[in-house]
Image 1 (cartoon, protein in one colour):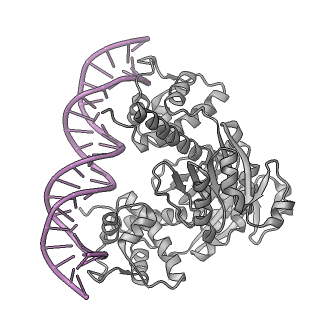
Image 2 (image 1 turned 30 degrees about the vertical axis):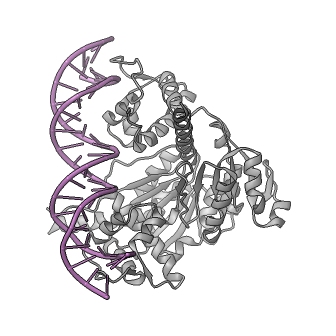
Image 3 (image 1 turned 30 degrees about the horizontal axis):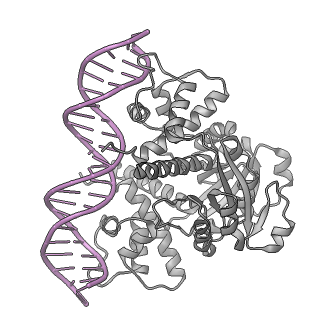
Length: 218
Length: 218
DNA sequence: GTGTGTGAAATTCTTCACAGCG
DNA sequence: CGCTGTGAAGAATTTCACACAC
């Protein structure tokens, strides 16, 4: 049986794809694995392995990849050109910022609904996309074929919101609340992003460096 | 030479620490590696290996870890109790949301400055923390001993802001702009978080599942 | 020289298997 | 039983080394 693309490779390929999109917009024609690697903080060989996982690109020994060709190559293999509908649950400061962000559309993701538990807010908020109360999540997700959900609610509400989203048929979730959510359905993918945890990780790395420095002096 | 804690372990330990903080607040007394593993979507053995990296906790065969003891054990090993100063650069919607978020203080991180390139905004914005123009970043970081920085500026400004932060002496950066930043100084740690890339990854995973399903039917 | 492509080696990380405790 | 702790085995991923192209 042929092997699957490893998750780290998939992640890097998505990052490369984003980079290439930017390069393409700036009119850049060629790019080398070395430079891509530098931008991502990864070895160049690694980049080439990732790129070649689905077969050669036809850019052998030609002094770099053609931006446009490579983008197509990756986008094709991962179906990254595919358009998908998304929604945001929790319209506090962070959620509103998401709703207002126009980077989604540029890359084929359409935010077509916002949700909040505060019906007062739902009535009064001014946004380009329609907004509904929380209890309509599952129905709306089903009706509007929403595949991706962003959770920006307080910790205690996160698990319930995730359940509603999954009930409706969402296949991917980005959760910004500090309460980690997970899915037992292997076809529902969840990414938890907790800024405090990121800070904790950085803090631990800093402490480690400090300790190392002290040790060196001894 | 003794080995270093692997990065994945460090990451998990930080996540565990966050969990324990929450449990402690809720008055919970004990917790098993099995349950921790479930919350993090990781095997229980993995959790135990992580926890024991710095030595035993003294909770052998006792039917679970004591929340309080374990938290101290991890916090101690990683210096997670350490207070650090932080700042936010870019006070658009996302940056303002960060400034207003009170989760930082609760965990020992103090947001003591905000920065924006729009001097008009700097004069008029209403926040609890003082706000300065972008060109003062390096000086302020140095003067106020800021160790962590959050970047929430548009893509084209990210690299410049990162440079200013690092010039000032910041040791850790969380960058929310789509332009990935990196540091050549191994003692400056950077985490890039790009919501669009997260969506792209989820999208690729979804496509993969769909493909798998089709194949199974054949 | 700078570049790509790739099997083999090395490393890093996870899981297994089992001993020991309440 | 279900729990912790841990050396050994296993799997996943990265890096090395080198062939080849311009």
